[in-house]
Amino acid sequence: MGIVIGIDVGISTTKIVGVRDMQVVSPMRITAADPITSLYGAFGKYLYENHIELGDVEQVVLTGVGSAYIEKPVYGLPTSKADEFVADGLGARFESGLDRIIVVSMGTGTSLVRCDGDDIRHIGGISIGGGTLAGLSRIMLQTSDIKQVSELAKHGNIANVSLMIGDISAHPLPGLPMNVTASLFGNAKTDAAKEDIAVGLIHTVLQTIGSAAVLAALNSDINEFVMIGNLTLLPQCHEVFPMMEQLYGVHFRIPKYSQFCTAIGAALDYVYKEGKPLSTNI
Image 1 (cartoon, helix red, strand yellow):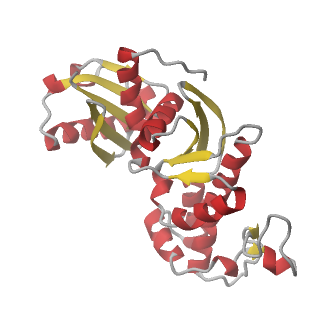
Image 2 (cartoon, one colour):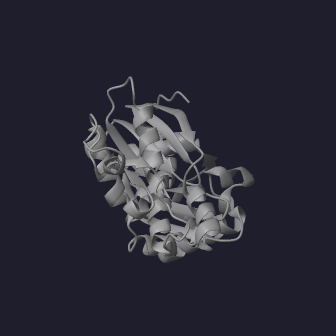
């Protein structure tokens, strides 16, 4: 089998990976003004930097919202499309090594995909994600640069803007320690420091996503959550999710190639279809 190229095409950002012999090859991310420019720029750069000839490519598999704009074979190569939710599930399952999980795809918004072996289904989502963080940061911090917001947040104190259980109760509540958040931004003042606002915004988005994921697993015995998407790169994930693990008795996992899982899954969709049947229920 030649190399299979999986491409997750966003509106301005494209992620591309190769899969050869069930190994992920050199994930890459490219940003451009539109999906077509982003796709072709990513593809050309990927082939060039990895010394891959067009003849080495067995299949190109597209997924993501931007893939709807692509109607022709990429550079004349065999090209197909994979359902984005299937790609989320396949990539997260492959990267985590777990078969029974809920995949939490933290993009502009957040989608939730349940995997039970080869049964992969989209179970819902929430309209809070990276777009929320960027928009609120633009209004409150005059920047939508997530890296800048994250740096500011490193010097902030969440207790300066949010209410904790200890702020409203003299004793811990059942299952709720004193340091658990009672109300996000419930303690914010008009003169709050930018650093505190930044950490409050990030915690608001991450805690909301984590809580939604846990609620989505109710009435099931799944307690493994695989977090994928660009927001997994926020260092604050390593503060928020361990705290929520202790609170809910679950596991939040961020795999090595978390931001590329959808592109990996797109490539695997073709690989698995060629080698064995894949049962999905979307």
